[in-house]
Amino acid sequence: MLTVFLAVLRRDLLLSWRGRADLLVTLAFFVIVVCLFPFGVGAETNQLRAIAPGVLWVAALLASLLSLHRLFAQDHADGTLEQLLLSSEPAVSWVAGKVVAYWLTTGLPLVVAAPGLALLFDVEQGALPVLTFSLALGTPILALLGAVGAALTLGVRGGGMLLALLILPLYVPVLIFGAGAVEAWLGGTGATAHLLLLGGGLAGALALAPWACAAALRIAME
Amino acid sequence: MTNERMTNPDNPPGRSPTSWLRFAAPQQFYPLAGRLAPWFACTAAVLTVVGLYIGFFVAPTDFQQGEVYRVIFIHVPAAWMSMFIYLVMAFWAAVGLVMNTRLSFIMSQALAPTGAMFCFVALWTGALWGKPTWGTYWVWDARLTSQLLLLFLYFGFIALTRAIEDPRRADRAGAIIALVGAVNVPIIYFSVQWWNTLHQGASVSLTKAPSMASTMLAGMLLMSIAAWMYSIAVALWRVRALILERERHTEWVGEVLEAEGRAR
Image 1: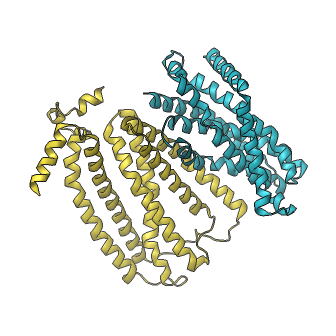
Image 2 (image 1 turned 120 degrees about the horizontal axis):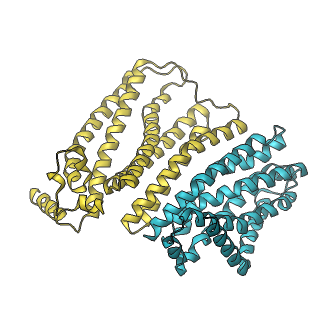
Image 3 (image 1 turned 30 degrees about the vertical axis):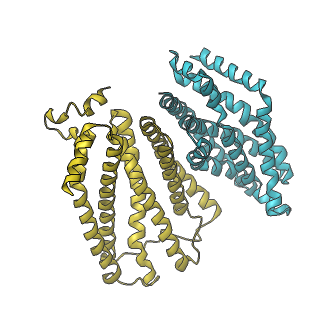
């Protein structure tokens, strides 16, 4: 089971590395969305500082939503997914491998880039570790929940918009606790409670989402 | 495969010992739904008239809010129903996945539009109620926000089941998203409440429940039961339409339609 996980993880990482331009597009999207906000709301420093955590989190949410279709589409098109489903290995192990590879290639760059972008909004430097940590805990939840939605909408017409409609309401708690962690730290109450809840959410998603995702893939390929 | 055999029109399940489970076959359920639906609809109509009469003419005027509060007789039943229908929908989705019965999926899909409608009615009447009492159509209160998210969950379910062509896949995919949604509803509600207490403070308190006059309570309960009856009637009619659509290639649907055509 672990060997399948590692093999799929390695394969997906290798494939992403071969097409690394795609990954940069996700990152560029994140950066551009974040940079649009000052044009929209005005460059007043206090205001920017107030909206920074929310803006960064919403941008991370949209960036991971837009890259979700890549998770299974390629394998669906060339038949790999069918072969994986036919194999005797438990589907959960390779689904988990794919999601982890997906997070490493799209979620992790956002986590790394976020502190730099936060400086553009003049966020207090002490809050940057909290921001990074909240994103590091929250983006895997986005990837896990998104994988279920991506599997459900696989090959469906209008899949992209449908995916957004299905998944974005489910992302709301992550957004609340993620952005809330930074704001709580800035407000002086400490971010521990928010981060613990995010960690709990991650544990819950890890326990449930791969199974739901595997079931959804089976339905999609029937 | 057992499912196919159970609902195969060539092999009527009526022969099996009389058990209510035989109504799990669409062919058996179709006439039953047709017989039951008008009764529920009539009950709903009568209760609505009585409930609205009590609500608008008998119940006393609220000493704080005046006549405006009377929207409660539509608002609260709609909000209750919208939440309850989502649970029922998820229940039928789970039954469908576990027991592999097509009728359960049809039932959950038939309930969704009614749930979304009640959700919208609750938001709409809430906005109309909010303007005179709070001075604004919308506040980002925990209840309002989670109701809005519930509406989005309904839209997602409806959109997914309509977008997938193959009914078998649509059924199952819809069932999974209904269950994922049902797991998330308490999380969403809790998180929104948490967020709300941090941002808003208690500027608007919805929880101040003044001791209610018994006529008010009676009107509200009557309207709630009316909403139940309405939901059941509409869901049954929608189930009938869905069954006909799905089974249109079978012989029995042809016979039923011919018989109905003759009756007209």
